[in-house]
Amino acid sequence: MRAVLSLLIKEGVLFEDRILCDVSAGVGDYTLSYARHFKWVLHCDLSVDALCYALARSRRMGLQNVFFLRVDYFALPFRRSVDRLLCLDTLIRGEDHEGALLNQIKRAISSEGRAIVDFHHWWHNPLRRLGLLQQNFGTNRSYTRSGAEGLMRECGIRDQRLVRFYQELEAPFFKGLSWLLPATRLLYEFGCADSGDAPPASAGASSTTSQPNPSKAARSAEQVSNAPSLSAA
Ligand SMILES: C[S@@+](CC[C@H](N)C(=O)[O-])C[C@H]1O[C@@H](n2cnc3c(N)ncnc32)[C@H](O)[C@@H]1O
Image 1: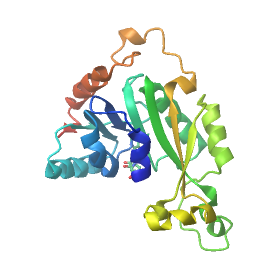
Image 2 (image 1 turned 180 degrees about the vertical axis):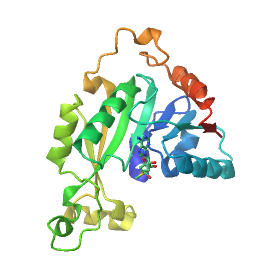
Image 3 (image 1 turned 60 degrees about the vertical axis):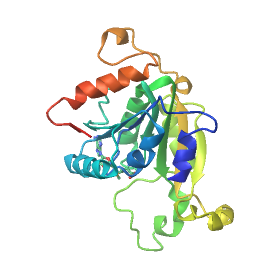
């Protein structure tokens, strides 16, 4: 969690007027922890149970700036308007799934925006991957670094920055051991400018936006949150 936050909150940069959007936010471990750093947080998920659970948590925490949106990440209602976008523990269903989702993410972030995504690292537990120990990953897909980066390249994402993330080593005491172990996750940060994704000619006339305008993303989120299937804090 600290590793992701340090990517989101760059030293010396204030995000109090920015929007954070998590496109598969689940029960809100990231959105609710980071809400105080951002003006608005868009907590998106398809699961009504996850949304209701996260909404109840946010009420208990007294958060006022989180919108809970029932959104399919294959049809994100944002176009070049999100300042910081998270998609964690989700690129795990196979290349077609990951490719379609990465394309949506790429289109959602603003020209100054950054996305943070992760892949499960194939080398994290090679004995299980090679079948020498019982595998406990279910059907989840994991990637080598070249596999993950090849996939991003196919989606037109360039200049991504890799951060090796060691879930087990978040405690400072264990940090020195990281060179011994393969990373748990391959965590990447990338921007819209890196992707070469040009805005569609008609974007200005659509309900989403082609401009880096944070308030438009919040407004479109407010409109979506008025839809019957959605709830807001
Ligand atoms: C493994 S959880 C990850 C939750 C969170 N990102 C985390 O790291 O703790 C994946 C989440 O994706 C959501 N999800 C699955 N398919 C989705 C879709 N098509 N659109 C939006 N969310 C979806 C699930 O409901 C679930 O909450």
